Length: 148
Image 1 (cartoon, rainbow, N blue to C red):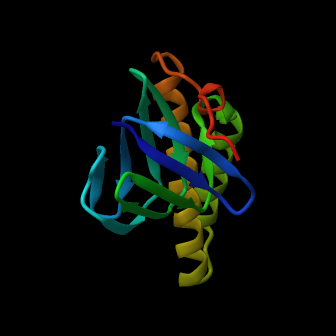
Image 2: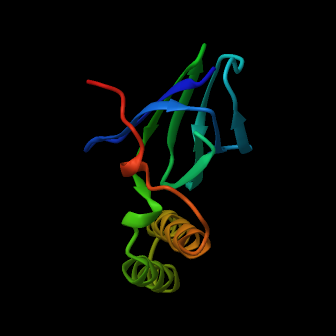
């Protein structure tokens, strides 16, 4: 029995459909979610989200957010979510370099924290893109979506 997954950002609904399993980057480590999972609400850290449906895996880079699991319904409210096929690796690499420069040239603790967060988001995008480009996967955009 599959579960219903919704991935929502402030800009758009990234995905809405049935999935068999998923692994999300929880604040305390990786969260494996299967149908009939115990109720859960927690913070997500920047990292890779793996979604499995019909025997195929899809990967997204999340920049953080929240996840709620209730029954067979999973809702992810993400700060940002990018399918591996949407990530511009060169642009993400440039963002990582800019963040490293901001860390080196910081003038306050607040600037340091913002630069570290930017660096972490860029690192996740680069890592997900490099790791998954050559691995077999299916774009989330190609998955069947639930009817609105």
